[in-house]
Image (tube, rainbow, N blue to C red):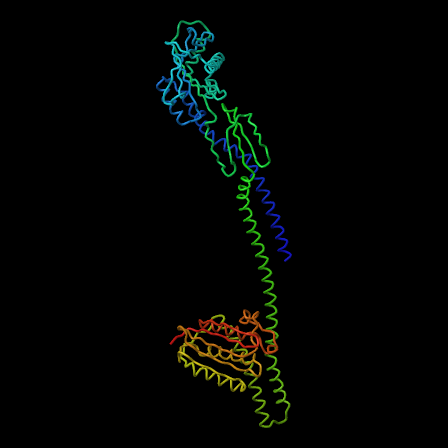
Length: 540
């Protein structure tokens, strides 16, 4: 009990620690898992602007308005956070262009046409500017900023080295708030020509095509992928300066800034404490179940150890009682035999009466010893299945009558009655059946008061089974001992059982019945009597 109490305290303490660990773990997950949500949500942005668009930027065939329309139409359909796209169909030359270009040194960057996609219908384009017509559109900062970046790169270009792809892409693109602008990347030969054109006066050179795409982005159109719906109750996109008015302790909040052109915005995560508690519980329960299983195993082991110790103690007591009783059983006839032998040995002469008396004593005591040894031997043989079951046809009335007569000779004051119903003969082992009758009859005589030494035996054929009942009017068996009487070496402590019993009789009967493929049961009332019921297979 002390051990179980200590383990129970440890179990409760372990559950408390497990719950605290689960709480801390989920709270840490609440803070750290936002990175996964961000990665999942901006994956389309990364796939397009960091993988697909760089490939388009190296496209040296250049785009016309129709090709650009098809390309942008696909982008607008697949990436809803792209609000609109401005396409600059521009040129690079070494002759000045008035009012619609940017002159940097000897180089001139000017658009021929400017188209807008996605302002009204995504599949259509709107011509914002054309050099041949008067337009109301002025070249914006995105065009100028990227052209200046390109010019600066050309000025510092080392024509003796081949620039890396990453270096080219970073200098031919520009990331601003809610906007990304890309130039198609010229060939290295074209870049060398640009550099020479920018440094000295040359005759008019061929005009070089230079496309530019400006993507205008809407961060509120980003599809939020909540990879932990049981952790984050609400996720929304808010400006970086957003600060909620409700800051009560009943909510957990965290945030993470969006990357690149969305850097003025953040993902804002909010969950109520009750919502988080469900996730804590779902994480805690498997741990608690594991602890409970371990606790159950430990308690079971403790109970089994206690049970085995208790059984060993009882077995020791039973074996001790068995040895005492067995010694007494052997000692009594041996002492009588020794006394009779000494009397015969010391007597100078014996009369016929004395010879018969001593002869009878020696014969009876030898029978007792022989019977005790035979019972122990038969018990061991039956328990180990070392004998075979004989199959002989017997007349049940003759068999009961023979048993009754033998016990009447032995105990003249024993009152027997019997009845047979439904059959006369059946096939069984008569020796084993006789042992059953003898043991139960002896018990009925031994455990009955002198005025109630009665036994009624009934034999009936019920539903294809032979049912034998042995009903006495003895002292009965306490209810607490009913489950123990068929155990080896077990003896009920009463005034009838102080001497001469080793606790094998009923255990021997149970082994006999089991060996004969039958069943034995008992009903008893203290000071009223006992009934043993034996059910055997009917073979004829």
